[in-house]
Length: 125
Image (cartoon, rainbow, N blue to C red; front, side, top):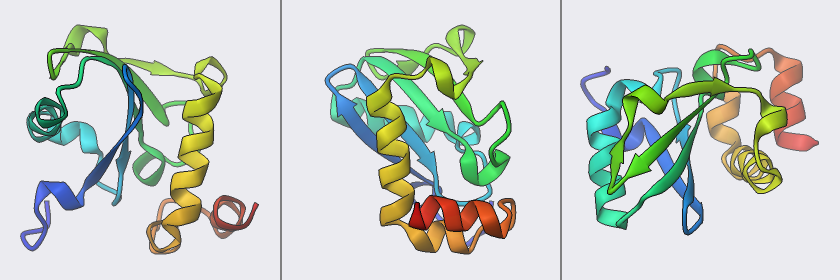
């Protein structure tokens, strides 16, 4: 991890519903590396339910872009973590992911994993 960044700058948690949240990586660093810090943030939210990690900025549009897990009293169940295809995600989760990147174009533009065409699609489509 870069020394001038704290873990809060490496991901962002967006609560979509009472029992659904999405964790967005905000750099090329995979936010799953920071599960204890994410659990601490989930505890502050009093969160239990389903969490989806959007790993677009570290994995690109590959089949392992999304990882889903169960959260029980702010603790992420490691055994429940699984790669999921976009087609199996709830429509509101998918919409939230595209809204997130459109509203944070700087994250997309500065990314070295995504191709220029993919960046354009995320920001302008």
